Amino acid sequence: MQLMTLSEIRRAAQSGAVSARVHVQVESAAPKLTREQKPYCELSLADACDRMTLRVWSDHPAYKACSSLTDESFIELTGEFSSHSQYGLEAQKWTIRPLTPQEKNELLQGPVELRAKQNADWQFILEAIATIGDPRLRALCAAFVKDFEERFRRTAAARKYHHARRGGLVEHTAQMMRVAMVVAPLYPQLNADLLLAGILFHDSGKLWENALPENGFVMGYDELGELVGHISIGIEVVNALWRKLSAEDAEAWKNLSPPSEDVRVHLLHLVASHHGEKEFGSPVEPRTPESMTLHYIDNLDARLEMFAAGYMTAKPLAPRIFERVWPLPANLVRSLQKFQASATPAAVKDGDLL
Image (cartoon, rainbow, N blue to C red):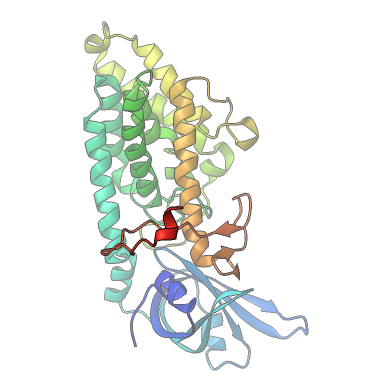
């Protein structure tokens, strides 16, 4: 039976039941009761990109074994998977077994395609940083990725709405930089160096708020992230690195234009304002062209990722129409297919030109 990821199974199950094996980590095993007060166990399962819920009824042969699982358990789930309109991905006629140490290690590395994409995205981030002309911003960005590479590369961009997976922040940051490098030349008033640095640091606080552990896919909760939040943490990250570098390079930075203090304050503004509105958590609204641009690029990439995920997980309502995925504003409709010119154009009838 084929070994698949949860996302692959979810896609295949949209066309009907699929028999498969999947390797997952147990996020939680919670004892629960039905309306009739009968006990069952609810397993939350996760791999590198997706999640599913498995309900284990008390009369199932594996009920006792499943009830003893913890978030340190890694298992293979084998069964017949189908997509339920209300409950999402479900499994029938299933069995489980523990993963071997080698299987667990391969699971933690993520699917080959995702691993390759994130490696390419990380390399793009490094190359984008190298294009920054302002030596202060370039040094600040280089110091950040050097000091925090390992943590950065296992951080999610969000807890559930978009890029909510190990390494998701790398994907999100790289794509934002790609967009910025296309947009900035179209608007000469934009400071492209500042915009790229702002993109790198805008979610830097999520390295504490949304970091996944080295040995699993269960995103825990960090006290600093809860009490301070990623925007405030990001501001502190910028300030701490800036103080260190400005002390080391004080003489070299002294006569640069614009003044170093202006550069620091404008970068802090990009971090502080990137949510766009105070009601969404920003202490200040965007007040410069670069901060407004960053806000819209951030929102664009996040929402397009929500569409892509929604087409896989949302309840179908009609052909090409899916139930709304929060926080998108309405039901989802599939994109219009891209035009493809036919190899042999259809013959034109006399009346077609009238």
